[in-house]
Image (tube, rainbow, N blue to C red; front, side, top):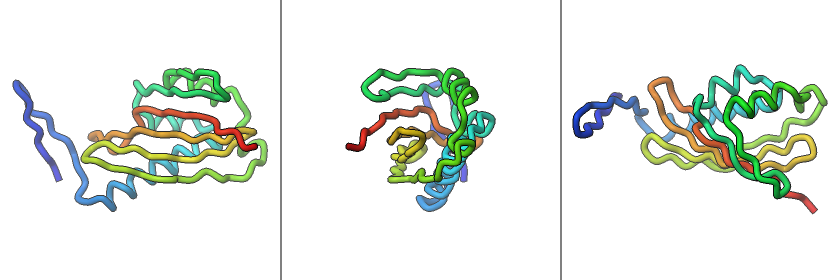
Length: 142
């Protein structure tokens, strides 16, 4: 289904899906790819699901974290992956909220000695849902 949004001076066409279930399933596929990319250290897969201008921000143990997508992927490429270290896959989707062509996903990524929680902003583009922003924090377990 195509929907036209008319703004002064031009027309923009945005591809939308028919219902919440289709959108939620498509977003869940992106999140599954995100988990696989992080777990396996697959930077090519991660690059496919992030918008090229994505910003990644938050804190790790109280230390501010702010990176471009390229900086983030460079870090992923230089570390051993959780899969290489024989970690158990425990990543999970906690929630997905969708409003028109935008969405927020809350996910949990316990990897290495970290207990990460991410808030991922997604946007529906002509090529499908992509992650446009990643907010992250490590929640210490006492």
